[in-house]
Length: 377
Ligand code: GDP
Ligand code: MN
Image (cartoon, rainbow, N blue to C red):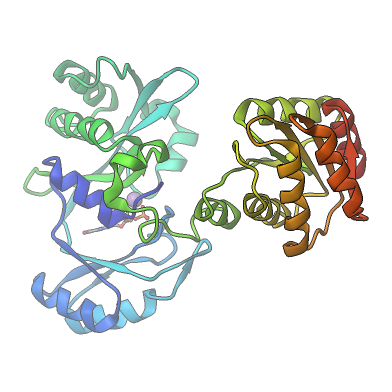
């Protein structure tokens, strides 16, 4: 889950990192009032979960409250890389002497975090990283050791940041740990004319697996539906585990292990899974209908493979679920169903008697995957 800049700003402040005074508003009049409270001259910043707002015209300096209102009217409703601006952060302007880049990002392959830092931060950081990679320091961070004073000093020195940036680096690491972040990025971290280091922009990605203890961000209102895959959002709302992949066979199965091996078998048949959905143990009609509608919403799906091994939930109950789901969801793609395990024969008979023209059955997992792969071709 990505946080908005203003939420990242709040976290930084809570961990003792300097941030500009700011308010979040949703209409031009409120923007004007905020500018009045903040001293007149302000920066108007679009709140969207995407970078490059400055280049897109979503970060604008306003000289006074009247100008703030006009600027706010221009930015609200603006579309930045597919994200509509619904809120603005009105911030006190900071006098910038230098712009730095600092971040911590989870390096899954290495099982560590990576500290990335540069003395040449700001809007051109991607170009700096591409053209002169030596200007960007990359220091591995062992999560068990964390960022000690020594480590923070090492990162600051490697990037050519002022020595006092070490304190900011230590606090940012606390944000990673306490807030269950997969990414914490400050670009720019600025040095003001007074020599202070201020986090002018922030990006924080909170691990979705930690939602249970990061409830303050909610599952709903702080998640920008436009920022995520709409099908994933719909699946999550229905309590389903849906994962988008890039092939053409939609996969539904019960249980993580069966679903994973189904993906492998589909790949082994020369097809690629378009997505997969684990409907868990109880494949009720409701869950089946929800699952089918989620899978069919993906335009890349050319065939659907339902692979269920009946256990506590027997295959006849699953088959009833599929039959009922076929009454509420219009099947638009061919579907192959493989039922095995508890009451498989009864389940197959129920499906056979429904005789849906787009539904085929298979008795083995390999056979089902071959059929689904052929139908997707
Ligand atoms: P981004 O483009 O989405 O990364 O948005 P940022 O919040 O990083 O702002 C983009 C750029 O606007 C920054 O790199 C700064 O150069 C500039 N900027 C943002 N806030 C201020 C400010 O308070 N004062 C000044 N002088 N420039 C600012
Ligand atoms: Mn930025």
